[in-house]
Every structure is written in C-alpha cells, then in structure tokens.
Amino acid sequence: MVFANRTIGDAMPAYDAVVIGSGYGGGVAASRLARMGLRVAILEQGRLWRPGDFPITAKARRKTTRLTGRAPRLGDPTGLYYLSVGKGLTVFGASGLGGGSLINAGVVLRPDLNRLRKAGWPEAVIGDGLLREGLSRAETMLGVAPVPHPQRFAKYAGMRRAAEAVGCKVQLPPMTISHRPGPNAAGVMQYACKYCGDCWSGCNVGAKNTVGITYIADAVDHGATVLCESRVQMISKAANGWAVVVQDLSGENACAPRRIEAPIVVLAAGTLGTTELLLRAQEHGLKLSTKLGENFSANGDDLVIASGLDEPVNAIATGFPSQAPRGAATVGPHSMALIDLGDEDGPLWIHDGTMLTVMAGLAPVKNLLQLNITRARKLLKDGIYGNEMSRTQLLYVVAHDDASGRLKLQNDRVIVDWPGYSSAPERQRAEQKVKALIEGVGGVFSPNPFTMRAFGGNRIIAHPLGGCGMGDTVENGVVAHDGRVFDPAKGPTGVHDGLYVCDGAAAPSAIGVSPLLTITALAERAMILVAERLQRKLDVTSAPLRPLRDAAM
Ligand SMILES: Cc1cc2nc3c(=O)[nH]c(=O)nc-3n(C[C@H](O)[C@H](O)[C@H](O)COP(=O)(O)OP(=O)(O)OC[C@H]3O[C@@H](n4cnc5c(N)ncnc54)[C@H](O)[C@@H]3O)c2cc1C
Image (cartoon, rainbow, N blue to C red; front, side, top):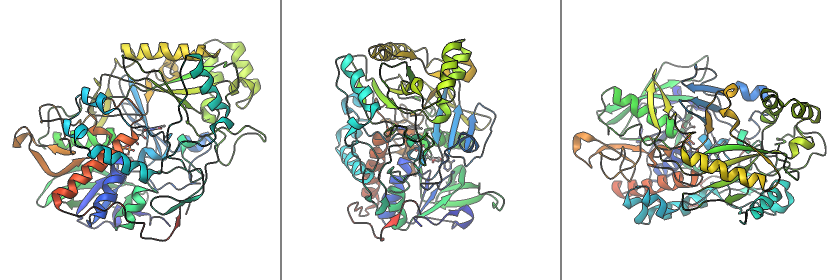
C-alpha cells in the first residue's frame, strides 16, 4: 500500500506541523516540512482514491458528487467531485487525497512573471529567483512532459487545423501524465496512459502524476501521517501555536470532533476551503486583513462547445475500462494541445477537451430545449460515439479577469459572489475570438452550456483563485509574499507566527495560464523560506527512501 488509510480517530493530540488539504499546495508543504524533519499530519476532507477506484458510470459519478455553496447541501461530504454554486459562478473541483490533481487535465504552464508584476504581485515573489527555483522543483516532482506523437489523435489534428485557419501554430504543453510505465520521482510505480480521455473524472490507469502519488507519497516516506475523511472545522490560537478542530467524516464509526495542536499550521484547503476557514476564524475573533475574501478570480475561465466541425475529432471520452463500442477511435488525453489567441488585451488560451459520456448524453436534451428537434433526433439516433458527436468538441478557455469577485460566508459556508462575471467585457471579447476560431473550421459555436437557465444559469469554472491574496502589507493583502498570514494587530507587515496559506487562495490576481504549476511553485518558494527561518536543512534531491510501490495498490 502507498498509504495506510487512517482517519482522524488515529491522530495524535499534537504535531510539529499540520497541513490542511492535500492538493498541490498541501502536497508541497507536507513533503517539504517532513523533509525538514518535522512531525507532520495531513488532514484531508476527501477520501483516498486509487487508480481503478474512480467512477465510470453516470450513476456512480452522481453518487460521489457534492453540492455546496448556495445550493442545498446535498451529497457525500467526502465525495470526489464538488460543485460550489455561487452568485454568477459555479466552481467545479475535487476532494480527496491529491485535491484537484485527481481530476484535472494536468496541463502545466509557466506564468508570465512580468504580467504578474503588473497585476500587483509582491516584488519579492517575482524578483528573488525563488519562484523560478520552485517552478523547476515542481516540474521535476510532477514529472511533466508533452504527449508524444500527437498526430495519431484526431483531436490534435482538429486543434492544428483550427490554429492554422487563424494564422497560429498549435502548441504542445507539458503535462502531468506518464507515457511509459516506470517509477515516478517519489518512487511510485505508474502505468502508461491509455489515451481514454477520462482524465477529468479520475485516472483509472495510474498514468496521471497526481499529488497523492508524488508529493504526498514523498511526505509519507519522510514520516508524515495522512488522515483522510478529516474535515477541519475551525482554527484558533493555542498556547503552543494553533489548534484545529477536526470533524470525522469516516461514516458509521466516526468519532467526536478532535482537537489537534501544532506550532505550524498550513492552510492548503484550496481557494474556497482556505478562505472559508479564515472567514470563520475571523468571525470568531482572529484578527485578519479587511481584504479577506476579496480579489477572487476565475482565471478568466470558460468552457464552450464546438459542434458540426468539418472533420471528426473523436473527443468523447471512452474511459478505462472502455465504455465505447468495439473499434471506437482512441481519443487521447483530455487535453493535450493549446492555441494562443492572446493579444494586448490579455492572455487567451484555448485548450482542447473531451466530453465525458454523461455530458455527451445531454447533447440531445440541450437541442430539444432549444427546439432544435431535427438535430436532437439525429443525435439520439447516432449515439454518443456516432458521426454527429465525433464532430463535437469541448474547449476550455483560460484568459484574464479583473479579480473583482468576492468570497463570503453564508450559513457558515463560503460562497462566490460575482454576478457580473459573465457579462464582463473580457468574457464577451474572448467569446467572439473563440467563435471565430470554431467557425474557421466549419463548426458551430455554443457558449458555456451551463449558462442556460435549465442548467442553473451560472458559468462553471475550474480555476478558482484568491480570497487570501498576497500583498506587501495588511492594507493590500491577506498574506505576505511568503504565505504567512498578516496580523493587523502587529502593524502593516506583522504576521501571525506559524500560520501559512499555501494554495490557490494566495494568488492576488488571475494567473493568465493554467494555475497548477504557479500554485505548486509558490508553495515550494514558501517552504524554502520556512526552512531558512527555522534554520533547518531542506534537501529535495535525495532519492526515495522506500522500495517501489504500485500506484494502484
Ligand atoms: C476539471 C479540472 C481541470 C483542471 N485542469 C487543469 C490543468 O490542466 N492545468 C492546471 O494548471 N490546472 C487545472 N485545474 C485547476 C487545478 O487543479 C487547481 O488549480 C489546483 O488543484 C488547486 O490546487 P490547491 O492546492 O489550491 O487546492 P486543491 O487542489 O483544490 O486541494 C484542496 C484540498 O483541500 C481539501 N479541503 C478543503 N477543505 C478542507 C477542510 N476544511 N479540511 C480538510 N481538507 C479540506 C479538499 O478536499 C481538497 O482535496 C483543473 C481543475 C479542474 C477541476
């Protein structure tokens, strides 16, 4: 086993460091603090998901989906997928050991540091060289590489045609996917991608280089304890640093909430989770910046659909084991190619995507709702792997926004408040450019399907950022450049000793490219500075301590 499956009932009353959440930020913090020789506990609300565990049917996916935010709270609190319904936006994300890495596309892009400087990121982050060091460390640990021989996939050829039609070149970004079997940087055995396109519902192959089998495996090898189904409810000051109150979500034999203390607490519960914990702590008297909850960004995210394309792109995921009829074409990873449509108005990246079977099955419903009866009939007759749907493709847009969203507590849950996101001029501009791109290859553009009233009316996004943004002082930020949380009682640059934010919440603006690498690198940078402050050695180069383990065991 890569991990013993422990829950909060197994916890000790105190550790040297507690890491809340196990996505990119939490994974880095846990691995690096454990490598510094500290006793680390990782508290994760979700479950342990191994390759082979991920749901492949619509029913199983629905069973592990949780609704939160303004929606009535429905579903298993340890469920893999969550939809946090806000005002104007719905955030889609994952809970489980590895956080968003369990279901993301794994596209890895370096940020444009000059852009971040102009967007007001602290000069220390941009200029001291440690973020660059963090970027390389993250790329090494996550084992990133582009998809080899992409020409074999119709989806890639479709992106190339679309790019050429508007005078651009298609790009092949590095990805967190393994293409050959073998051990990863943490010594965990992984398998070669089967190109089934199901990356974003969870990789059942063991080819995705998730945080759980890279950074967290490394943390465990250096003595960290992983406690799943353990939801932190509250953080507060304690005699020796910080106390966290943890709810046991492990089912029938769950114990009463536990209190754990540690001099170091790293908040890495994701943009929504971390901001929620700090907003709740503020309500209970912890002194924090008045900026808390502000500058929420969706990273200019959008999702659009191209249909009726001039040639098949075979972009309906088949899954592993395959759900498609025998002989169906190999799809490729969920995302593998990029078109850069950015200009002086800001970045605009178009990513290819696959549709899960459940989404593809909704296509006739959408057409019926739009009274497009002939097309709905044709789609039903053809089936999801038929000719019509083979010319249909989901595309992701990553662009710019002004980070004017807000996160607030409502009924003790964080919600996104950004009614103006969809109507912002940047969204309209981006839509026009993507529409022209799709029409250039004979396709029909459909806007984000979830903006239809029948599907809830909110745009769905997957890159939530901010709420606890970095700043130079407590007047313009919630945390300092190194992730330490500002304490307004200690003057403009005073901090709460031992309390850190290390995840997407610390981004003070849109990043302008897919965010996972920047979030990981920021956490690497914060940990380099922790080691300096604690005068502890942090060696990230030593080889894995344990013999090979299998990602699927
Ligand atoms: C479908 C999809 C595709 C994506 N594709 C890409 C891509 O290709 N490239 C890219 O760069 N980015 C992509 N992203 C975004 C990327 O995955 C996220 O930006 C990233 O995971 C954020 O990392 P994080 O450390 O901030 O938090 P997360 O990864 O969100 O992890 C937070 C963890 O904290 C846990 N948690 C929350 N609250 C609590 C609590 N109170 N107690 C204990 N645990 C808690 C959660 O369960 C979760 O596991 C995608 C996201 C999605 C959903």
